[in-house]
Structure formats: C-alpha cells, structure tokens
Length: 481
Ligand SMILES: *Cc1c(COP(=O)(O)O)cnc(C)c1O
Image 1 (tube, rainbow, N blue to C red):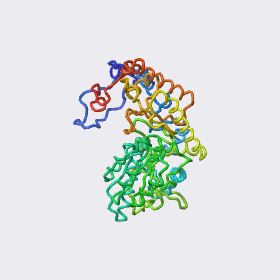
Image 2: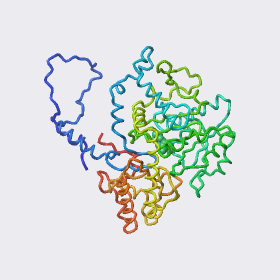
Image 3: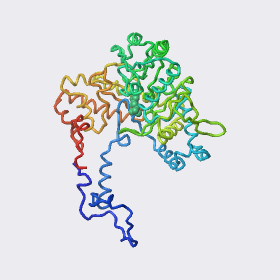
C-alpha cells in the first residue's frame, strides 16, 4: 500500500525557494492570533509531489478509464467538447450577480439565453410546458416538485396529507415527499409483473392524496404501459402525478411524460445529458410542470422580452431553491450535449441504451436468475439468488468484478429483489466492452459453482482489500490527519 504524502515528508526538503525579503515584515496579524508553532506542512520537492498525486490519480476509477455499469446512475461517457464549452471564458468567468444587478443584465445575455433555450429544449423532450433549472440534483428536483405540489394544493384550499410512492422507487422519492411535509404511503409492486399493483393503488388513493410519484421505466428497468389508467385514478381524487425522470435515458424521443398525463417531473441532466457525476456531484435536476403549475415554479424566472432578463415578480412562486440559477456549468454541458446530439440523435441514444441493456440481460440470463425476463429498458436487474445457495452473495460478485477491472453494478437495489445486481450499460459502450463484461460475469458465475470460497477474499488487486463497509462509513479512521 502506498504511503500518504505526510509520511513522505523529509525535514528541510523544499519544492520552491524564495529570495529573502528585502522589505520590513509588517506585523499585520495581532499577536493573539499568530501561530506559536510552525505549520505542520509536509516537506517535499516538486517532483515528490507530482509523483505522489500522479500515482493517486492512476488509482482513480472513472468512465474515462473503464466500463461503469452502475444501475440507476447512467454513467455514460461525457464528450470532452462539452467540458470545453463550459470552460469558455465568457461563461466560466461571468460573475453570477451580473444578471441580477440593475443595468447589468446586458452583460449576461449569453448565459440567460442558454438558460431560456435549455428550458425550452427540456419542454420539448418531456412534453411539459415550463421548466426551472434551479434544482442542483435529482433529489433536490423532487423536493422542489413536492413543494410546488404543496403550494398548488394550498392555493386551492385542498387539505392533502399523503404522497403515494411505489415500493421499488428510488430512496430519494419518499425522503423528498417527507421533507416537503407529506406522509408517505408505499404502494406494493405486483410480483408477477414487477409493476405497480393497480388494485392496491386504487384502494389507497383518496381525497388525502396530494401526489403520486412514479418512475417509468421503474427501477426494475420495466416500462409501465398502464400509465394513463394510473393518471386517471390519481386525478380523479385531485392528486397530481409526479414523474421521476431520472431514467429519461430509456425513453427520449419515444415517450414524453407530459403526454402521459404527468403534471410535474424532474430530469437528471447529470445522468441523461452526459455531464460527469459521481461521488455526490455536481448535478442538476431541472423541474418541469404543466402550464397550470407554472406560477409556482421557483423565482426568479428567465424571461424574454426585447432581451433576456430575470423576473422576480412571481407572487405564487415557491421562491428560490438555489443560489443564483442552479449549477450553471452542468446546465451548459447538458445544453451543448443536446444541441450536438439533436432530436433524432437523442432518440437513437435511448434505442442504443435499451438495446445494450437487453443484450447484457439476455447474455447473462443462463448464468444468473433474472426476476423479470422480458424486454427491459435501459437497465436490467439480475439476482445472485442461485449463487447465494453456494454461499456467494451479490457483494462477492461485485468485489470479484473489481479484480477483473470493472466497476461493480449497483447491488441490493431495488429493495424488492433479493440479492439484486442492477446493471446499466448505457449507449456509449461498444459491443467489445459489453462482451468483456459479460465474460467476466460468466467467469464469476462459474467460480461460484466450482470454488465459491475464492470469491470471498475479493478484491485482492486493490490498494485496500475487503472492508467492513458499514464500519468504514460510520466509524471512519482518519487518524493520520
Ligand atoms: C439518481 C436517481 C435519483 C436521484 O438523483 P440525484 O441526482 O442522485 O439526487 C432519483 N430517482 C431515480 C430513479 C434515480 O435514478
């Protein structure tokens, strides 16, 4: 295992030397605030530092290094041209206050035009009437959406207390609804179809229902064709229908939530529209609504009269949900990606993503159990049930994949599938890469049959081996700091 940079420190070694000061040293820092001992920095040469961090960077795993089939996360390749555009001086150096200062909006016309245009493009892709780019992640979009739902019901004097959410939903759905002040009721999945149990749903929907949050395709990678019926039941009791659009990569150019009677949606720019993410950020979760909900969108809004401006005069708005206008550089990358790919191109993205997921699922279905072996959307869910009988669990398979050079898929999610392995290949991978991954998965399935114990030690090729992950998260050892 390589040492940390402080362990490499040698007393007196320097990366740079400065000439002695030839002016008197000002006593600028009051005595009581000044240090009494030297700062404990590591002492190294420039070369030591360069080698240390270059070595660390090579330990990093990312989409730029290899396949990253993390289900539900859409870890697709991010074209470098989008980074270049986001780094253009006119965008990157723009002061975020310019658009808001009286008389200065003229200097921010380009940025405001991008926001306005991207909102319109998202309307076209999703079939919604208006968008806000403010929310900074998918979960933040959900919370914003639920706040809009709540503001709408309040305005109409409707006392609604519950949000209905299917049991296979992403964990952020129930948390967002709860943070917005709603009681969450869980609708079961029909085990036979892997889709929402409509009978149970009908029984639970009532005048107390404020909203129904749906992900379609759901987290099992299955598209629910009975969405109109679900919308009718929801709307009949005055509830709004929320679309978790984080899985938009499966349906672009094929299905628009706005056409499926959804009232509110968020989309994850950092998944569908190729902006790099991982390790918690950066993200962007724009929220789209039907026209009757537009007055409730976060303020300020970008408007276009003779030129672009920010309009803060929105009396029914839920108010700002982010500083300035959200994660602007993430929005820029998504905008560049959408223009570059084009409408027909986005449909092709989804087709290829769905094809790749089905290819992986069918290629592995002889080696792993597949709970719902029918055409999936952009991701597929397998289970390690068969391997678990030999003592090899989903976690062992995930760790063994690391030794074979692959990032593991999502495991133990969705919760409705025991020993779940959720694989999302995305459209950007070649058949050769998919085949290499499939072969690695087959080799692991064979090892589970012939010598299951060998998989318990994995990973053996990484700087740190198998950890107690709960302990690592809850009881972090950062003693060297
Ligand atoms: C990723 C995801 C979210 C949450 O998005 P974040 O940007 O991680 O907050 C919500 N729902 C679904 C279905 C997702 O895949």
